[in-house]
Image 1 (tube, one colour):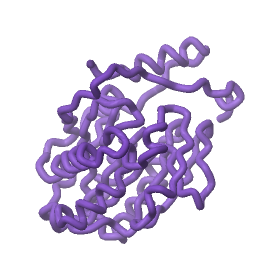
Image 2 (tube, one colour; image 1 turned 30 degrees about the vertical axis):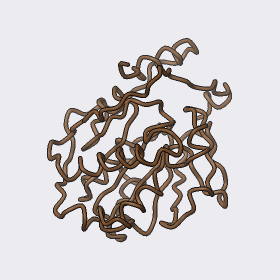
Image 3 (cartoon, chains in turn orange, blue; image 1 turned 90 degrees about the vertical axis):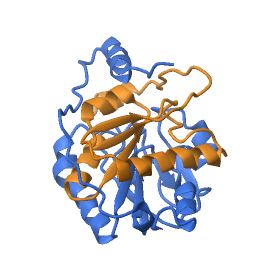
Image 4 (cartoon, helix red, strand yellow; image 1 turned 120 degrees about the vertical axis):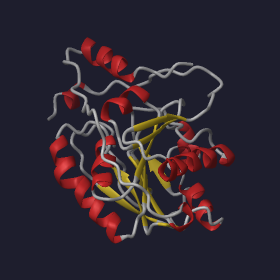
Length: 99
Length: 162
């Protein structure tokens, strides 16, 4: 996705990436990123919490309007309220070996 | 809490399965196109890579490799009419409310309230993970999508990886 943002931005359209993986985003360096320290399935917060969802989306849009520093990675102020972990289901071996 | 270190976590998981560390794309600089108009005049589109598809479309294959499928989603799509198939994150909340990962209702509200100019004619779902042919993304699929974004008059592109 970072790569996609880089291509779209280079084509002349300002982009913003809303990321839950700070280290991954820092490597790829999309043009502008908003890091939200939430579980990967909740970049915009909890279900039916429109207020928080809007606040995060608005912060992302404002970042496009206000930030001219290439590769900026800005932390959205948030506290998920409980700890969460990296979680991944085991991928079947036959798929792992598929190219 | 401190941000999860996904690079380390993934290297550990796949290392124990016998795979070499993933060669992440790494850049020291980034392109930048300044926004040349106020947000209130901007047309906005959005992309998710979270295995999100309309129920009228086939489900995504969470285990696929190099899947360059890219869905166009009409701007007025009902957020209740989607399915999510991705085994690399917990999407149980997004199953309840799509806006957790793909806030199309929230974006439409911002347009209705005049905070942004308009929602683009289409949203996007694609560029799932496990794409190893990065050159195809950089030279073929992403540029093709950028052309369509331009044709749609998109001023701001919001990407939400998962």
